[in-house]
Image (tube, rainbow, N blue to C red; front, side, top):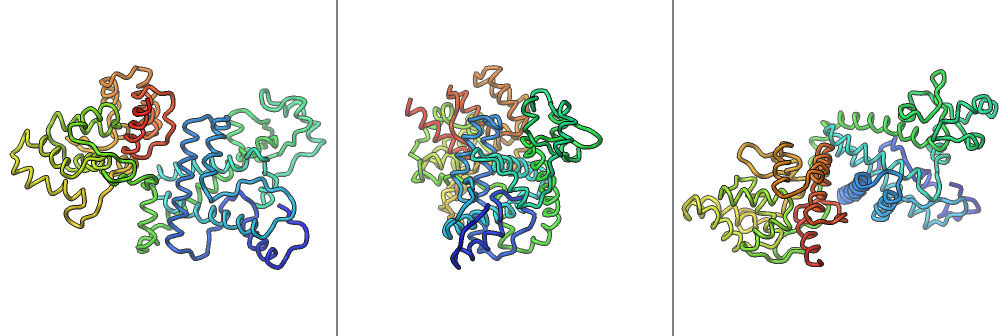
Length: 467
């Protein structure tokens, strides 16, 4: 980026500040050293987490590089204030623009390091974080407004020197890889001579010419090399962060935020019958609603309750808060649970042993907190079901054969079940639930990224009312 022309004193100060982040894409080598308030710490982390979840959704739904993928990624970028994605032309830049750019790049830098700390605790978390950050990195470098690789190389002090014209002429026939670089393009394309260990992805797919330990990489594939380099840096950085975690354990302000981020739900709270988007339902409506609008986890709990007239503690908690979220009042909830449980026990036993818990979940007992329904991530990651339990996420916690049987019982076709099982095998549990939604509602595309069982219910009700 060139900032030409004479600058005022304020513009010069803004320019010097911006040099801390000379490029819109970063490799995040140096951690931030400034002091920030906890409120901003959490806000930046949640903002980046929202972005990475959108990146994940785009990658699952669409082929990377396709027009639908590019469109989904563009929409994700527009939802955040973290990243400056405008194509930076040379020329004079005003102080206000420089200040805005600095603010975005600072937020990008800090938020990355916060999530790095939050997602270095387990191999699954590291893998998820790396995959989304790598997709984001590649997309930002390949933004359609212009491939910004040369200025990025300069900003990061990375030296990749093109081969000489003489060497290109000597190897022009060998540099032409079928389906990659055509004969006429080879005359114009720059090639970079890179140690083969830095080009393993391209070598694996036979996209480059290899000779004496060097890969000859066309400029169009240089982003792949940079992505591999970033993967190596990030993998090492996550390992270092994991080793540093014990030193943070006594920090009782930051650690709870970091631990909560990996399970963070980012949407509506669904607090109850008077909550946002919720209507009011009666116990008599629950059975038909479970068949048409409940996600599989809640449909299974309703079915188990009807069959056994009882649910264990975590099942009652998961299901009771869900029902509260879709509009079941406290009085109706007591009537609902009492009617079912008293089929196998006396009314006095229910009132003594179970009614307190129902009232507690509605904030009428104990510390009187207004508890919110469990998000998908909380259901997936906490309190796995044991023998005799019916709570949890069927896509995560059910044995494959049992899940198939349940889906067959709901009249899904063999091909539909295979679609779901493929997503389950790849550990895309929430995406599998969205696919279940599409199949049971007979639509091509749900049009939403699922994060909460109550979100599933509301989307279903909205769709059914519009049809």
